[in-house]
Amino acid sequence: MAQPDSSSLAEVLDRVLDKGVVVDVWARISLVGIEILTVEARVVAASVDTFLHYAEEIAKIEQAELTAGAEAPEPAPEA
Image 1 (cartoon, rainbow, N blue to C red):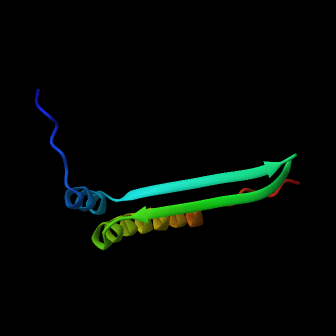
Image 2: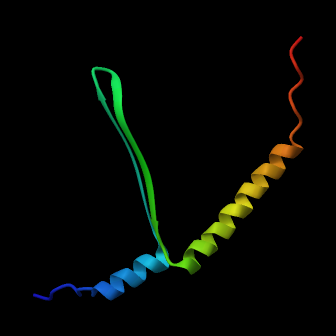
């Protein structure tokens, strides 16, 4: 029976930094309808090169959305 290849910690870390990982957490604790605690967290693990690549793409998308929003005509006010 063949065992699956095991990855070393260095290989796993290299893959995570190359591809990137995002952990997004949102939790709310309430008691009798009263909010006691809200936790919002976003953890991003990636290499600087990977981060910069995706940051450039996100900036392009945001710029396109802003440009499209500026060109859209405003609705006429209701009389």
